[in-house]
Image (tube, rainbow, N blue to C red; front, side):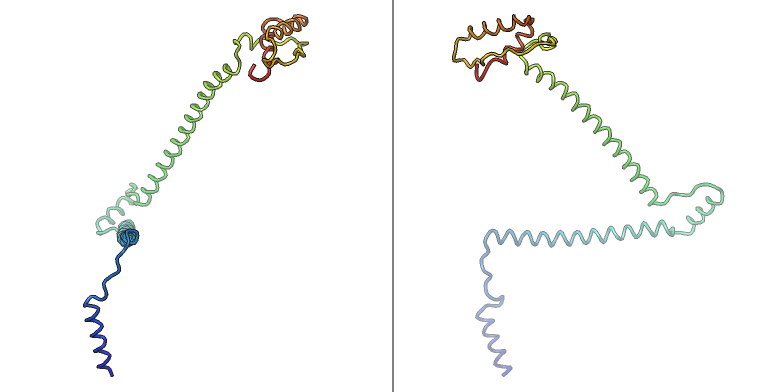
Length: 199
């Protein structure tokens, strides 16, 4: 019975060939996915190797800091301590000090950048505000800054929409303003309020 199974398996191997059935043809997307999977595996392997090296280096640094390699160095440190001289700072202390130093410098740079940005924004805002205010009004600065009389009221005229004679509207406006004794600067500023639409 065992012989029969072995022979049937042998026949299947010969029929299928020594390497088994031919692999199905892959589509381009399947090839890309397979390539990406292989790349990910390789990167993972390289990452693990780098992590192991990093851990080994950290352990070596700790060993050097905790116990010097030869006794002569420890004797020198002991002599330095007894003489009152400062001994070498530890690697971690140096790293911490440089990290703090760089952090402080980075904060200072950020503060300076913020100040510069604020200055630029305020300068640009001022420069932009002036043209905007100038374009809002078609009048000169003298006309715009001319003070309104305390009893001034805008004339109650029918708004001019361009369908009637513009000279009639202008004459009516001038008459109403002259009755109030308004100067020309105020007349110029008040006239656009009597216009309507594209007029």
